[in-house]
Amino acid sequence: MRKVIVEAEISLNGVSGSSAEDFWKQVFSYHSDDVDAFLSDLLFSADALLLGRKTYESFAEVWPMRQGKDADKINQMPKYVASRSTKPPLAWNASLLEADSAKHISAIKQEKGGPLVQYGIGELTASMLRAGLVDEIQLLVYPFVYREATDAFATIDAIKLKLLSTKTFKSGVVLLQYQPLSTD
Image (cartoon, rainbow, N blue to C red; front, top):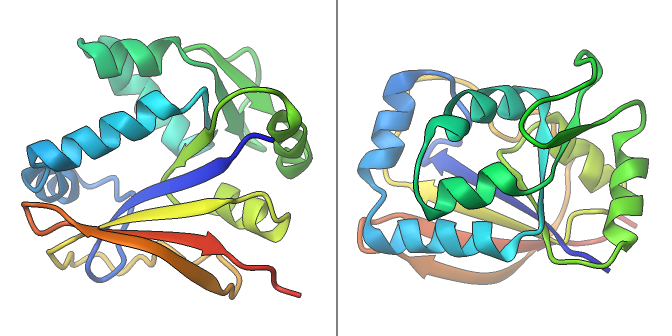
C-alpha cells in the first residue's frame, strides 16, 4: 500500500499557504541548503502529488516555467487534483478527482508505487484525515510570525498525533513529523 504524506510549511503562529508574496519571501529566506535538500528528497521519494484546487492552480502557474532537476521531476509526475469547481481536462499532467476525493485516493493508495505527497494543508487534508488516509504529516515550522490571521488547521477536525521525529535545520526551521492516530 502506498503511503500518503502531507507536507506543509508554516509560520510559528500557524499560517500556511498564504497567497501573499511577502509570506513566501519570508519562507524562502529560511531555505538553507539542508531545507532545500529535505524538500527535494521528499519530492523525489514521491510517485505522484495530491493537490487541492488552490495549490494546483498556484503550482501550475510557476512550476512549468522553472528549470532544474526538481522542476523536471514535479512537471513530469502525475498529479491528482481534488476540486468541486474545476472542470476537466486539466493541464500539467493532472487528473481531476471528482465527487468523493477520499474514495479515489483510497483506490490510488492501493495501487503499487511510492508515496503520494500533498503539499499544504486544507480541505483535502481534512477529507483524507477523516477517511484515515494520511500516514504522515510533515510540518516545516519557520521561525517567524506572520500577521495574517489564517489558521493552517482551520478545516481539520480534532485529531491526535504521534510524534515520529524532529529535526532542526541550520536556518532555524524545525521539522515535526507526526503520524495521525485513529480517532476511535
